[in-house]
Image (tube, rainbow, N blue to C red; front, side):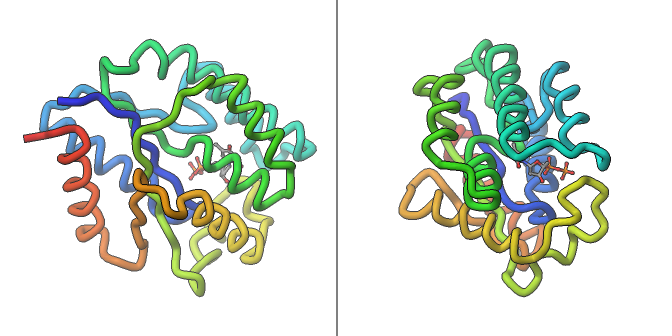
Length: 203
Ligand code: TYD
């Protein structure tokens, strides 16, 4: 059995958290030791940072935002990811791609800065595999209306840019699998489980 770092990415409302949850239940059933994390959030300090970032009242400048997301990542990396690498499988709800997709493709922050900061924190570390959850273009924005975090105010156009960013990041890469949220949850669960079986070598 292999211990892998597996990321669930996608825009808000794409179903990534649902499928991470289902994947975690599946691994539990198969007795695969694993940890689940979310970004921003995860470790105790990162959860503090999450509250700051996602509160309705927060009005950080976009560069400040970027630095807080990266601060949260740094806490997770040193306190949770690194000590458990190769010991347990790690499932992460959002990681580096979210920062490129939102802060660069969404908010226009220079890609080079994001790359440099990630390198500063993570060195050469890379996740093993990413499930990219995609929302049909005409449905983008529908589910977001019910959400309470401050991204509510961003429109369809913003989420379109972010999703296109995710697609560019995954383009021609082998360690990505696209999950289409207009397919049924059961179909997608099965697709994800099959992939987990082959990645982790679950019998
Ligand atoms: P998420 O955890 O998906 O929120 P929820 O639990 O309410 O579904 O996402 C939190 C928000 O943080 C999301 O709008 C995307 C944003 N985000 C960034 O902008 N950059 C990042 O690097 C990360 C990790 C998240």
